[in-house]
Length: 150
Length: 208
Ligand code: SF4
Ligand code: FES
Ligand code: FES
Image 1 (tube, rainbow over the protein chains, first blue to last red):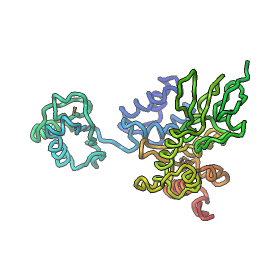
Image 2 (cartoon, rainbow over the protein chains, first blue to last red):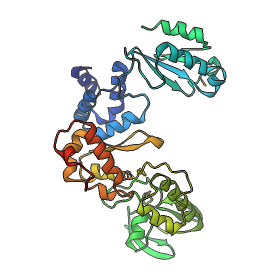
Image 3 (cartoon, helix red, strand yellow):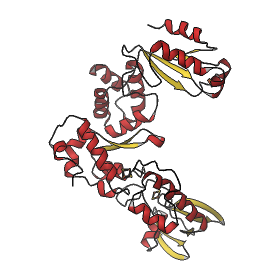
Image 4 (tube, helix red, strand yellow):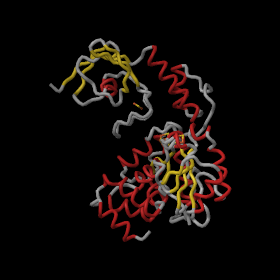
C-alpha cells in the first residue's frame, strides 16, 4: 500500500484521532492487512501513540498485522453448524487450500478463519467467503464454491 | 461546600471534593491494599484489590475505592468478611500468574490466600498497567503498551522507541508488582528481535 493512499484515507477523516478505528478499518479492507509503515504514518498524522494503535489492532479480530489472502474464508464452527457437520467443511477447506485456521497460503490467495456462529444457524453448516454467505454446505459443494475464487 | 465528611472504619474522615475513597482513607492513615494504584497516575481500577464496602442510605454496596469518589455521609468499611473473601480470591487468581511475586505473597499471608489454589499459568504479568501507564502519562514516551486481549493480553515494547528511550530510563521496572521480571524480559525480547539500532542489545538488558 503506498503512502499516498494511506494519507488520502487519513485526509478523508480530517486527520482526527477519534477516527482511528475507521482509518484502520479502511486500510484493512483495501489492503487486507495493516503494514507497519501504514501504522507509523497513522501514528504520526493522527498524533496517536503507536502503542495505542497496536493495542487496538491486536484487540479486534477484524485487523491483521500479517499479510492476508485475497479471499477470506470463514468456516462457522458454532454449535448449530458443528452438529450439522462443520468439521467436515473445515477439513475440506483445509485440504483444498492447504492452510489451517489463522493461516494464509503462499500465493496470498486464501486466508482461513473459524468463527463461532454467523447468526444464520438455520442455514448450517455455513461457509463465508469475502463476506458472502453460503449455506447448507457439504464437502463437494464447498469445493464448488472455492473454485469460483481466483 | 468543598469539604466532605465521611466515615471510614468508624472513624470520621475529612475529604475534599473530587477525592476518591482510597485517597480519603490514605489521608487519614487508613490503609487499603492496592496493586494498580500509583499517585502519579490516573486512577485505573484494574486490579480490584482495593474493593471496599460502602453504605449509602442503608444500602450496602461493593465498590472499587481507587475510582469511587468520596461523598458526604458515606460509610465505608475497608474490611469485612465479604471484602476479605473477594481479596483472597483476587490474590489466588493473580498468584496463578505470578506465583513468586513478593508483594502478592505478603498480601496472600494477610488474606489467607492459597497460592496453589489454581493451576499455574505463569505469565508473570498481572495486567496492572503500571508500566504502560507510567510510560505514557509520566514519561510521555509510549514505549510500552498492551497487545492482544483476554487471557492472551501482554505488554509489548515498540522496538523503535525502546531502543532510543529505555536504556536511560527503566523507571517502569521497579513499579511492577511482579518484581520487574516481566518488563525486563519483554524489553530484551523486543530489542533482540529487531535489528540493533543502538548498542542497547549488546549491552544486554537484564544482566544487572
Ligand atoms: S509487566 Fe508488571 S507493571 Fe507492567 S502491567 Fe504487567 S504486572 Fe503491571
Ligand atoms: S452456528 Fe453457524 S451460523 Fe450459527
Ligand atoms: S488499586 Fe483500585 S483497582 Fe487496583
